[in-house]
Image 1 (spheres, helix red, strand yellow):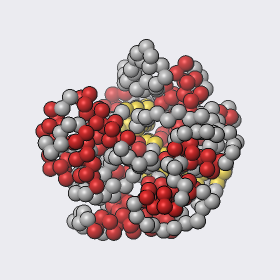
Image 2 (cartoon, helix red, strand yellow):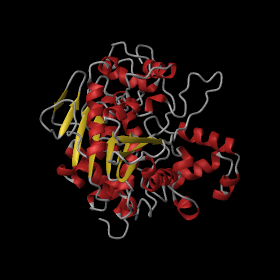
Image 3 (cartoon, helix red, strand yellow):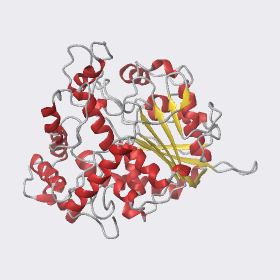
Image 4 (cartoon, helix red, strand yellow):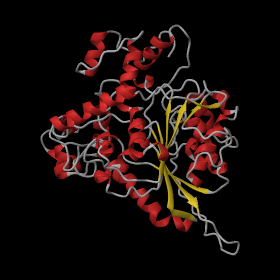
Length: 455
């Protein structure tokens, strides 16, 4: 970003920030992560602690790859959260299949494959936790799922699996910036994406049998080309309705009352979620119309980047939090807004996972590349305060039980540069969220995808 930036994302941010010089941001592919907590069971003094078991995935970085993060970067090892809990939780992190490997969908996949394979990978981990957490001293009946971005939206999909009749295998959930691109046209757009991947992999017209026999390197290349074929700010694949495991979009299942009744939820979003996904080349109304490929409600903004940012925010990000709140009710949901500068999507991860005792070249690289701007808050206590809310929720089911700051249990906590305060959240506007829910409902009905018993 900054003057002369050629990246479309940087151009968009420059529209908003004007002539201010800003941090250079290296845009690289991100690995999706989801985390699981299990509260420790209480033991008598005479009860022996089971042997320690370490479940960890690390990848050696070959020479010449020092500029890339390992498969399990130390940023996500959970030490800060565990320490904040008083060592009363077990922290489990895992990966799952992404891109075409995890989320190819459409009619062909429904007939001969496994749509939403990435979600099934996640469920396998939750099954493992349910079966074996007790061997590590954990309580399988006190499992808290936590995810950010795609991880959080994955949790949202597990809550509505099979119309809300399938136990997600966790009792509580922390959803940080739940974000995904709603895709509902199973026989149309989703099938078109399958056919595009089929062609890119050299299997045009040959279907899943050909893809299963294709060379892994070719499939990886096809996956990369599939992602690059998308308009900036959009994604080729992701969790999507398949008529079975995920019957329809989560917003519609939530509105119909078809969701699993977990104990409670803690949701959060950043103050400026969508700007990282804005195509900076969108500068006119015509550009915006081309981006949408259809005409939606027209708003007035000083910059087209603002307009596009709000469109992405409402359609794919923060409205998910409103939908969850409306479904589960205020009594079962706590909400936070992360406003530490710059407040971009995923900028809260540094505070969530910060560990003041950890130091390594890899950690230093993470700080340098990703969180240079908001470094101040790491030493101001905000990270400790934020972790106290999350750890308290994971262990006791109440973020306020062992909180470090605040004397009044709020409904929405604003985590700012130097303080935490109660606010009215204006990032989840009812009119916009209602509009998108009605739009998705109409589009689903138009395609004939409404499942039996759903509205």
